[in-house]
Image (cartoon, rainbow, N blue to C red; front, side):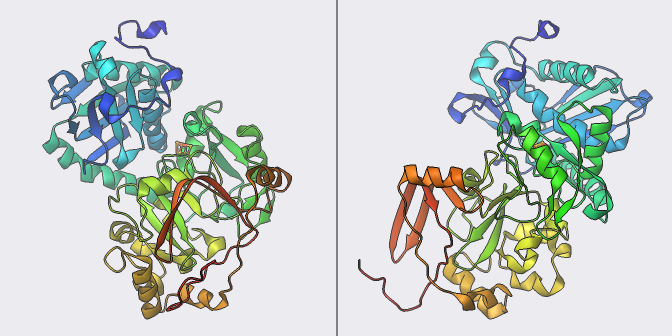
Length: 474
Ligand code: SF4
């Protein structure tokens, strides 16, 4: 692109999706090793913005130590006659896409979860200052969103300054999210779709409704509406929701049609409020995962920032691998934290009556949205670290999920050869639940079985643990 001739590395959509491994990185900004990081877009008055101004608070890239991780903040301030504060979330989300256009510069996640890396190769080519990154962002934003008349960008790497601004950023996100609460899906004619993450997950399409927030937690229904109005040909588009086919699962004819079109026929049905059957697809930048725990017939929730393993022994990264990629995987469901505040949250699966475990940090954040009688019945890492401890906790607290344990029957899944399984999947995708596991550990009867690249097909699987009984020898 000629508009980037003065930038030492290449800039273009072809670099979207590029991953930079730790061994190849020059520096890391934000990410899981740093508590405070954020990105923020703010709509300002014209006199408050100096177009093209780039400010760096703290060490610039060339002053950074190779291999180190730094706290990080980006503030983008924009002005324009037609700009409204409702567009802030959408402008902010574009930071992700535009940073990823830069060769050797990787941006993952959003808001307070951002994780960026600069490659050694691009640093050696001369990408040694945030001035360059700021110039690229400024030009891309202004060319792709002409309603931005003026824009100034601040990069913050000074740890104290990031720490000071971080709580303010959290307050701004919360105020934005709160605006969308209260509106019901049934009260609007239009939903919105977003395919911004297709560069990472080609069959993913977010369906953003008032009561099902985007997976990344960065785009509300209001944000999406504002975006589709100003940039109707952009990655966020209007969906005529059409006929309500199933109010409990959340199936709408217009959503099915739109998703089918935008995923080139790959995804044909979407049930918005469930993690089974035809769940909403999961890209890769979801804030958390709702994962089914068959031993208790309930859901665990884990967020991206949780460092320990969850109650089933798997870490967020492993669960995320089983969830991501734009697929519809039964029982592995990408979610945003804001969706957990919705009355429609996993409605078809029982909502909070089916949620059994989540990190304390998440529980604190959504506490006011969990039915009061259930708050103390949902375990955190302080109550249960293993499935056995979880079972004991749920029984002792009288969690409603315990009622479901009464109908336990064991039905062994039928094992079919891979070719036959593929044929089955093609013939009747609706009938056969599929779990695809890159490496899925199963612990049973004192043995650990690792399934590598396995596909398991079963009409019905009910897992029952019988206390005190030794596993049968076969
Ligand atoms: S997670 Fe969904 S809403 Fe968020 S950027 Fe990706 S596709 Fe768009």
